Length: 272
Ligand code: HXC
Image 1 (tube, helix red, strand yellow):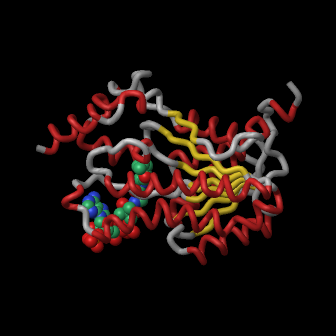
Image 2 (cartoon, rainbow, N blue to C red; image 1 turned 120 degrees about the vertical axis):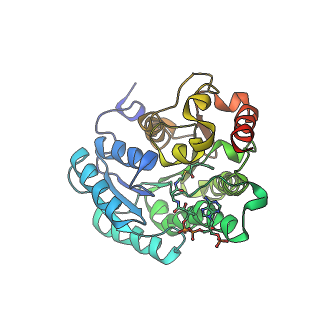
């Protein structure tokens, strides 16, 4: 294997990476992994306090040049401004990870139009805003887009009508951009994390079902770790995946193989 076809400690040295929603959970782990592998990393998030603490962590992991921008992905102007500032300091993005997401558990009949719209706005429109705002940079670098998706995009999960619809849109947007932007050398892929320990998503989704019962539904018998998702993100955005575009990498311990039946039943029992 040559250095361009295997993961090396500094394989993202000289590369500029931007992660939306990068102040916590899976997205922070992805940003940290890129920083650890030499990239100049920038993140955006809504909460200034969480952003500050993430930047401190990322600066320690990398070469101290991590950047943070307060920006809500629903605000296309704010995301575009953050992407432009990051490019000004780090150079045009080689990798853009669209990870910002919002979610809550609610029965479809109790979901208000504004609740539905809010999650679609963050997950789907926010993903488009970041991809669209990054296009010129990615065209210049022949870079890579990575969307953080979810199993709900493919299989309906109870209490997840809004998130499932939004993530299904994210998946189709990913394939559409891969199709249209391949001519510019831009690759676009998505990653589907299963239940990942310690994340806000799992905390919200497992509040009723219970973490133990849920872990038992995963063929590998446990939740994943944020680092396990970050490793796959590195691979997908690296030269190892240079001919991979329009694909979905499922890193869920096998959960998709079992469907959502047991989750839905456990939820119905817990909520009845
Ligand atoms: C029912 C709810 C609700 C709940 C909010 N809403 N929480 N409805 N049950 N638990 C409704 C509100 O009533 C309101 O509708 C609308 O949603 C907007 O709520 P706001 O609080 O005004 O929105 P906002 O302040 O913008 O906050 C966005 C949020 C919030 C998504 C609602 O939870 C948030 O900021 N989340 C970010 C963190 C997060 O969710 N992390 C987990 C991501 S995990 P009305 O009609 O009353 O005005 C994840 C991975 C899982 O996404 C993948 C699944 C696909």
